[in-house]
Image (cartoon, rainbow, N blue to C red):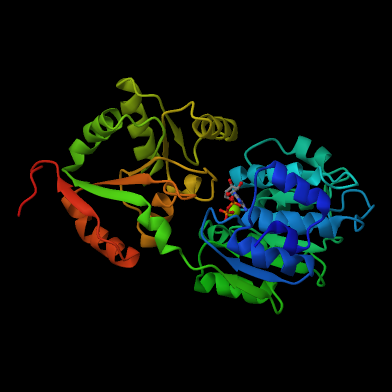
Length: 379
Ligand code: ADP
Ligand code: MG
């Protein structure tokens, strides 16, 4: 299938071609026509499946000729869980809104930075991309109004629920007109999500893209067994030996992430941390550096790394296992994307082996396990 058959305007098609997007992804094939048709949509597809433009493109078309002229009245609201995602979505809106005949003002707002410029920024806003907490603050201050909203998007709804935004989301819903288009996107389905779904969506087009087992096939997975005190030295050894120039390392806590980064730096390996205790500026900068290949190692907690779009990574290392098998698959799914081969490595203690068994079962794949203290495999 091509983008041409989806009902997009010639100007958008031209921009897509210019951005080197040749074929729509599966979710785009179905979501774009449904959203153009003003339907509610529930889209479940894993991270990296192209959910952003699946709503940005049709919404920009729906927006055209439909712009509310009342000041500080946004026309479309995109709720997102993190600051990083807000910026990312805003960038995509900005790229494609240049294809429209009329200028459209898109603004991203989120906490952790001063609210005053954001209040001023609500002048003439059309598309508002917001994290729930900051949006409520802006509403409290009468800086923006949601009574002209025609479309609501909940992007990464699963993540918003995981982060405990449910009450805030409900509060925000009360500000919206009852009659509107709703789009809910998520990488996973859960019972919590179903409850939100029922409140928000009416008779939606449901798009569920099954996890592509093939993409896991593109990932070479290895697990190394070792005592916990060896993890640090072994991590450094792997990075050097395998000449990793761009590697994402996951750990479970802010404390652990910082400890890993400090050790790496002491050993002359360029590394930065990304977690909730870092300032917005520092996070944005580290991520940009890492994406552009100017930072060798990025060490992250799950919270920060999920949903951040990094097109393709050659290496992912699990310094510690995530609790949920789904998160493990998410983590390693950052490599082996777009039909390129990647490598995922787990550093395990004896203690983590049982949990790793569970993960392998869920994944439907066995991973080679090497005991670093007994490197020669038995039998
Ligand atoms: P998701 O929201 O599902 O995690 P994104 O929308 O962030 O995924 O897209 C992941 C990456 O894929 C982005 O770098 C995006 O530019 C790219 N992408 C999206 N759609 C296409 C397409 N049709 N062809 C090629 N690349 C695409
Ligand atoms: Mg996304």
